[in-house]
Each structure stands twice: as structure tokens, then as C-alpha cells.
Length: 312
Image (cartoon, rainbow, N blue to C red; front, side, top):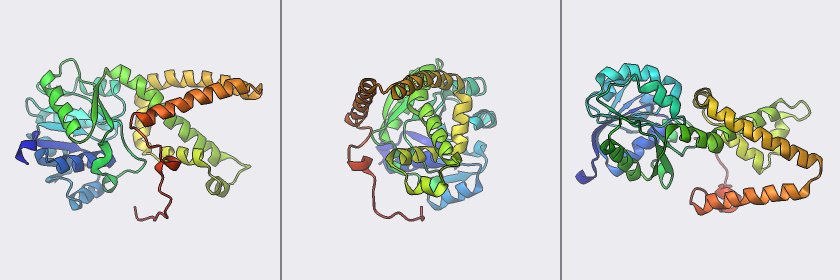
């Protein structure tokens, strides 16, 4: 529909899980006349072209951003400065530049002095994803009824913020506006530290000399399975998250370690009252997440128990 068009040309730099999901969602809603895709990986670029995820495909990001009204970086945050320096001279006046990284203060510090003054820089973070990566694993529904946080810089115009907000809403998201520093603290406890814990627990299980790897796999209970799902996330992306949100992660990790020490004492001292109180409080958090529509209360968290193949 012509009246659905929001941007004449959109450029996506990076076409992994998030980038390819954005591409599918934009095409589903018919939000642009031209969708340009760029990726440093020839394999990803070729795969995206076969999947018809855009209208043009470019190894060089400079070509992709030519005349683009909106540019979204969908690569690991460690690549942002290099990409920003490459594309800066080619960005047209009035263009909006955004991203999807789960760290925001570092993104502002990295790109604000690289991008030209004639563009509106509005960092973003869709709170959605899976443990899989690559263009073929994306899907348009990834953002439906999920939150996307925007952390606009002081120089960004309200009109540009409203346009980007409208795009995320058009592809299914609920949008929150937040300060970049506050975003990083919130995500440190809700996402980054949980991922660090998951990586650590799965790594500890793998290192145990008294338990074989086959036993870890064979007798995995639900809790450990959930940790392995989280720990299967893109290692490069998460490496960059921890390196670039170090202060917030360390602050939340310090608080977590203090609470873990109290829990250790409760187990050691057989303090059942303290344990029950904590478990009751945390169960209520789970119920609140379900009530907010951010998870399902289906049995076993809605897992499908039919046989899975290796085709995906």
C-alpha cells in the first residue's frame, strides 16, 4: 500500500538474525520503496539475496547508505566506529542513523563524534531475539508485542524520533524512550548479567571432572536447558556487549554476588524461611512478566516437544 510507505530508502548494515528480521518486518508492512542490504560476509549477503530480503545488496556499506533516509546498524557494537567512519561522508542531510545494539552509552560515545551534524542520530535496542544467528533464522514476527528502547541524543530532532518510533510500532513493537546510561543499567541486570551467569554455569558443567559431558547432556533438567539456550547466543555479539557495558555489568554483578553470598549462608545455615521468602518473591516476578505479555504460561514455557531435526 502506498500510504504505508514511511521512508523512500532504508539501509540495513548487517543481515544476521536481527537485521534479517527487520528486513522481513519492513517488507511485510510495505514501509519503504527501496530496502538496501549490506553485510561484510559474502555468504550472508548471498543468502539474503536468495531469500529476497531487500531490493539491492551491497558488500560496501557506503553504496547501501547512498540516498538512504534511514540507516540501521545491525552488526556487533565493536564494528560501529569503523562502519560509522566509512559511511559518514555518504550520509545525506536529514537522514536518520540508528542501531540495534544492546549497549547504548558506548554507542553514543562511539558514533556521536563520527557522524556528520546534518543527520539525526537515534540509537535503538529491540528487546527481542533468539539464540540462533544468520539471515535464514530471522522472522518478521520477532518484534511483535516486544519492546524497543530508543535513546535519542540531545541533537536529534523530535520529528526524527517520532518517525523512527512510528517505524518500530509499524513492525510490531512497543516503544520506550530512555536515557542511554539508564538503559545500560536496566539491561545489565535484565539481560547482560543473566547471560554472563548462563555462560559461566554451562562452562562450569563442561569443566567438571566428576561429571562427564554425556551425563550433562543426558540428564539436563529444565533449568540447565534454559541456561544452555541463553549460552548458545552469538559469542561475538556478547563479547562486545560485556566489553562495552563494563561499568554497568560490574555494578550489577557486584550486587548479584552480595545477594548470592546471602543465599549461600541461608543454604549453609538451613534458613528455610529466608529461602521460601526469596523464592515466593521471585515467583511473583515471573507472574508479572507473563501478565505483561512478555512470556507464555503454557506448560514447560510453551516448548514444542515434537522431534526436532538439524535442518535449521
